[in-house]
Structure formats: C-alpha cells, structure tokens
Image 1 (cartoon, rainbow, N blue to C red):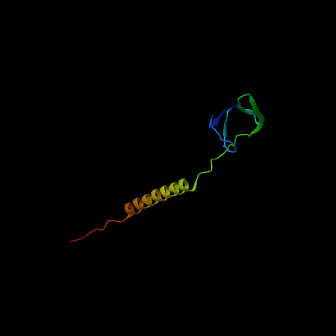
Image 2 (cartoon, rainbow, N blue to C red):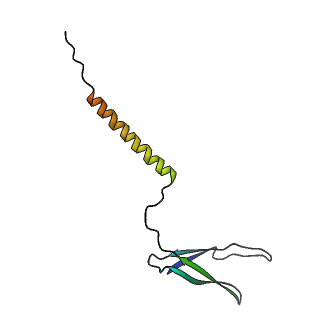
Image 3 (cartoon, rainbow, N blue to C red):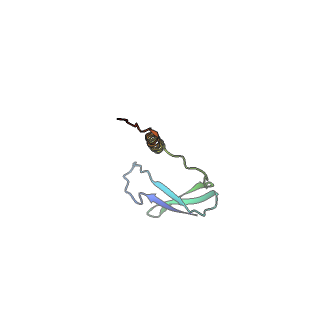
Length: 102
C-alpha cells in the first residue's frame, strides 16, 4: 500500500544522547483508504525494539487546487493588461480621422 523511507538510516549515539528519526510514507495511488498499521523496528546488537504505528490513508481530494496568492495576482495582472491593450486598440481604431479642406 506504500513505500517508506527512514532518515537517517543509521547513526551513532553516546550515552544520554537523543536522535530524531523521520519516517516518510509514500502512499501508492491505488492504496485502499483507511487505517494501515506498520511496524518500525530499532535494533542494537541482539536487542530489538518494535513500535506499531498507524497511517490513515484518506480519500483523495477532487476539485480545484487552491492557488497561492502570488500566482493569483500574476494572473489578474496579465488579464488586466490584456483588457487595457484591447480597449486601447478599439478606441484608437474608432478615432475619427480629421479631414482638412484647403
């Protein structure tokens, strides 16, 4: 249902030291929604510690992606620039030509 990556994969600790280990889960596209239990094992020499962890796979969200503000402002600026250019072209094309009589 998923693949996992652990960072860092190995490390050395002195007595009383701590280390943060990150587990990254990459859920397959066809994974079944719901809770999935997996086990993380840590070993030292012959001692093994196992921890049961639960990942909750949610239904994928369908719909529009929420754009960020920078992208939205850029699109609005481009649309406004195009509208201004079109209006200028229309106004200049409709400007009556002056006829001069001698």
